[in-house]
Length: 329
Ligand code: ASP
Image 1: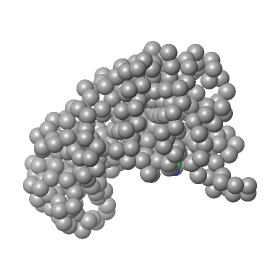
Image 2: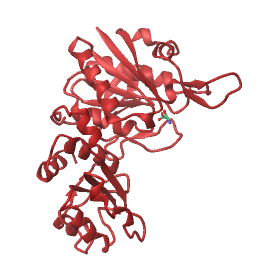
Image 3: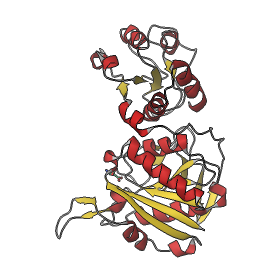
Image 4: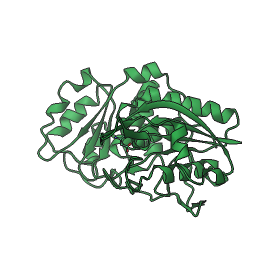
């Protein structure tokens, strides 16, 4: 039995380009990452290392990520116990969520990365990689969908957020907390959330062609960025104030957009739900829902963009989008 490791780049695989050069770029191979991890041999599974990409995570795309998920899927079909993906932490909350939406297996698919590159004191990559491999190899992590492991915490891909730009404790699940921890090398789960049925595979060409905008509402927002949006994008996620509110002047603008494309309402606060039936003013959640906006529930704006784009690329109409957000949100 083996755990398969796909490396995509990111800080975990970065080093300087020459003597005296402090700025780091992605250049370490999977073999080099693995060589820096003490104790990997104690996991009891062979590690099958595959270098897939070597990019900062800002250069990952839906197509690139889904190619890796396909390769991971084949590895599991061929008998792998679990799969680990290393990548940059910047977009990990989105890539792991995308993978989770389509991952059909009981076997764990575990994402990890690092906040301190390997040239720094206290680099966190080796510990994160070891913990991720332990989770991918464990029977307890089966049937949990896609997981994110960092700082010895195990998070559900659908809830996890990058919450700090430099801290090694950056990954958190504000709405749920971690699903568990890795303690003295053991996977200790605290809770097992129910899984959603995977979405059908999406044609990468259609994903490339489907574009979704995110508009974060700001103080005294006049909404000028929304002008002409329906000619350029196929869907919109609105990150509203608090429980899902926008200035009253924006409400008819968003209502008109729903005639042209699905518009999903989320909260810009970083945690908590969009409400459904508490406030009644123009621009409140009840008003916006009446105008056709879809309630994003507990999904944060970035995860809502991933879900909406995946649904639209698969040909979903407004009702299917609403049903999917009712399930996933
Ligand atoms: N900018 C880096 C990246 O996402 C940060 C990281 O790896 O943590 O590739």
